[in-house]
Image (cartoon, rainbow, N blue to C red; front, top):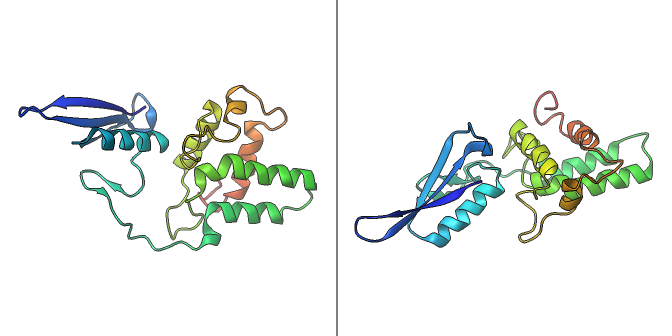
Length: 187
């Protein structure tokens, strides 16, 4: 988890440094960003925590958020549209299973992959995104794109070990199939 260190400057003012370990692991590379304003430091700390202990997309160290030079990605190449189309094209599954897949994508995958693309045109889903998603589900953490102030749909059920009949391995199978083209061999 990212934290804030308060530094007393020689002229009496304070600076606030947000520090974290990349990916949240003990061996991850240290990341840090310093702010003059405590409120800005708190907001940035929350962004780092929400993005799995990584630099938030579009943030440049020491400069803040900058405009992306990446081309705009068509909506049908973003994960939600791609995953819905994948489920729509599945054959030999019951209507109930299709509904469960659609619900699972909406509640447990879209909050993690909403703005990510399945093509090379823009912010592409990577193996790291998938690992963060699986670890987040195991730990009951909401995705970085869950509505603010919510714990994310179903987060308590995952944390409590619920979801009988819908295991993490089953969800991984759905995700692996829907994203085979994303990470080469299907992650």
